[in-house]
Length: 384
Ligand SMILES: Cc1cc2nc3c(=O)[nH]c(=O)nc-3n(C[C@H](O)[C@H](O)[C@H](O)COP(=O)(O)OP(=O)(O)OC[C@H]3O[C@@H](n4cnc5c(N)ncnc54)[C@H](O)[C@@H]3O)c2cc1C
Image 1 (cartoon, helix red, strand yellow):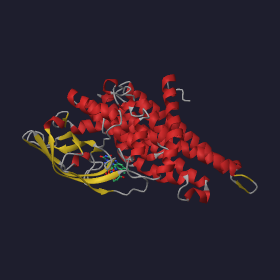
Image 2 (cartoon, helix red, strand yellow; image 1 turned 90 degrees about the vertical axis):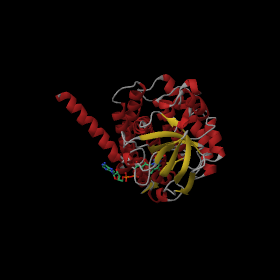
Image 3 (cartoon, protein in one colour; image 1 turned 135 degrees about the horizontal axis):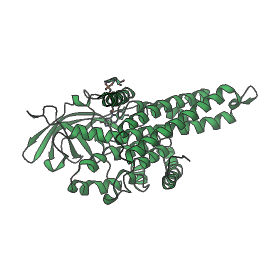
Image 4 (cartoon, helix red, strand yellow; image 1 turned 60 degrees about the vertical axis):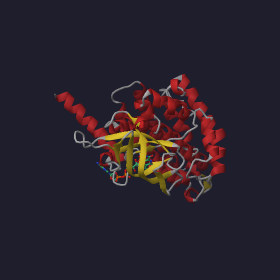
């Protein structure tokens, strides 16, 4: 229960939690640590209804809701990481089309994404352009009725399994040398070569790939030429807080596991939960989780209300929840002692899975840059 949520949102959360326990947990056990989206997971997510809150009703979704995206990720991330990644990418690769797509593009792509019949991805990062997105080197040159794209993308989640994606490339011209534009690309277009699957510390479908003379019809330009940077940032504004939600879900599972273990594991003749050092660890975890939950829900509500400070709150939620979850999961491993570092233990898996969340969709340091810029702007406004 959480005082910030409506009765309908609480019911949605309960539905997601039931799906996670009844469907995803057994699937996770069966599939193990996977670095692609097998048919069983694809089908399960397709029928889960979890993609609904990512899309407007008129394109087959349940109505875009940041709160519900966060609730869905919170419910599933700690249970089956690869399911959470797939859900997140359906948002990152779909939301730019919701924001900037023409009616024809929306009708062509969104219903299939909302139904989970097609999987998508978000291709922004490059070897030389990580935090510094504007350093992007991939180019898109107009040529007849197409753009010809050449370059390289790195760390693209769902990159192996996705059927399509939104790809960002430089469209420099004399009047706008820094221009970046967005394109809807399909895996069937010749020139998209997934040549390197990256092996992360935790299960993740993630690739680096070369784009070699990829001819994208001009009809697949997403938004205006030069509008790509803003579109990428707007997309991250929505999805960033949901990274916080995923972290929160992982921390919650770590707390449940730790509490159960501490109550049953006895040393020196009594359960370790009775030692104050263990009890205080559990209490610290609970406090961090409740604080993270409040920040995530607040950011999501601000987004749903189109509050101008939503971006600021999204960064705060992402930063705090991912850092807090990392601290919680580290304590969970400590409470489990040797058992906590055995491969296959839930907290061992979470310890590996939580780490990348402090890096992707803007590192902790980049969130601090965004938060500090917001504070400076506010101070300037007050003095002018
Ligand atoms: C698991 C995973 C999944 C990902 N999925 C995707 C995806 O689907 N699509 C996609 O496009 N990208 C994806 N990424 C890429 C991710 O967004 C980048 O890794 C991230 O933005 C950081 O970029 P970088 O790795 O190049 O690090 P760098 O930018 O090189 O940063 C290295 C260090 O320098 C610090 N730093 C950099 N600039 C500053 C600054 N101005 N001030 C203070 N510190 C700074 C960083 O905080 C970091 O600690 C993914 C990454 C991971 C790990």
